Length: 449
Image 1 (cartoon, rainbow, N blue to C red):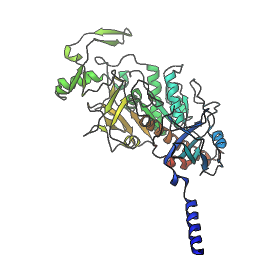
Image 2 (cartoon, rainbow, N blue to C red):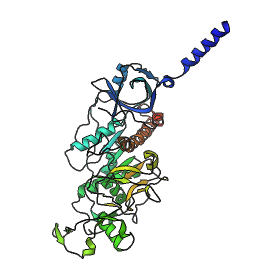
Image 3 (cartoon, rainbow, N blue to C red):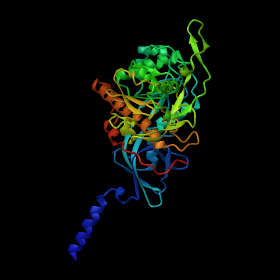
Image 4 (tube, rainbow, N blue to C red):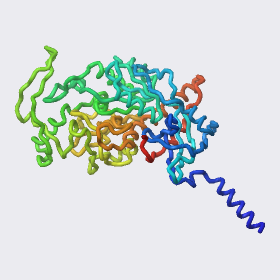
C-alpha cells in the first residue's frame, strides 16, 4: 500500500513538472502579441484574435508578468504613428513587443499565454514620396507594428550624408512602390512605352537611402519600385516596359509565340524631350510596339495578382539566402502585382543575386547576400497584410512573413546598436539579444473579426 501511494505521488509530481502545453488541444508557438482590445480579445499574429476569458498567464521571462492586467500594461494601448515625415517615434501608447506560446482548449479559447520574450520595438522607416501620408501607407505602418516594430515615415534626403543621418535613427528600411525610375540613372534613354512620369527628387532620396543601408548594414525590404531601385542603386539596369521587352523576345525567337496569351493594344507612346522638358508623341515601326503577355501572367492590370509557379529556374529559388526560408515554398498561389518595369537580369547590380523568377523570365526577387538582411521583391506583400483589399482571397501569413522578417532583422540591428552603445560606456540597457531566436514559424487559427 505504501509503495502504491509513493508510486501515485511520483506520478503526480512528474505530471506537475510538465508544461501546460502538454495538455492543450492546440498550441501556437511564437505568436506575436499586439494588444488586448476593447472587447477583451488578445490580438496576435497581425490578423488573428483570441478569447482569453478562461486563460492564465505564465511568464517565462522573469519579468513578473503573471496577470493579464500586467500583460496589458506591458503591451500598451494600440495607437498609430503620427502621419508626418520624421525619424522620431514620438509619444506612443503602444508598448513593448511580446512573443508567447498560446495554448488553446477544446472550446477554441486560450487556456494559457506562455510569455517567451519581451523586448523594445525596433524602428522601421517607410520611404514615401510626398508630404501627406495616404491611408494605404498608414495601413503599411500598422502591419509593421502588429509584427512587433514601431513605424515612422521617412523624410526625403538629398545626398549621402543626409541618408546616413536618417538611417542612424532607425533599425530597418522599407522601400515602397510608386513611379517609374528615370532611365538616365542607369545610363539608358527612354524605350517605347518605357519610363515616364518619374520623380527625380524621390529617385535621389531612395537611391541614397538604399546605398547607405547596404553600406551601414541597416536591414532592408524593398517592394515593386523599391526592388527595381535597389538594382539601380547597386549599378544595375531595368527593363523599361515588360510587355515590350517580351514582345522583342518573341520577335527574336527567344520565346515561342505559342506562349503568347495576350497582345496589348498599341496606343503609341510619348517620349521625354530634354530640350523642351515635355512629353512628345513618337511614331515607330509596328514591330517595335509588339507588346505581349506570356503564360497568362499579367504584371500590371487584370485582377492585380498573378501566380508564382515553381519549376526549373523559375519560382522561388531554394538556394536563396532569405526568400525561400521566409516563404517556406518555391511557389506562391498569388502575388500582388502592379508594375510594367522590372530588374534587367542581364544588368544585375553589384553584389546582388536573383532569388525568384516568374515563368515568363521576369525577375521577381533579388538579394544582397553579404548584408545582415537586404531582400527585394517585385510584388506587394504589404498591400494585403491586414486583410484582403481587392476581393481576392490572399494568404495574409505569407504577406506578413516578409514584413516580419524585416522586423526580425531590425531587432538584431537594434541589439547590435545597444551592445555597441553599452560597450562604449552609454547607459542604454539590454534590448534582449536572444529574443529574436525565439520567434518561430507562425501557425494560423482564426482571422481577426
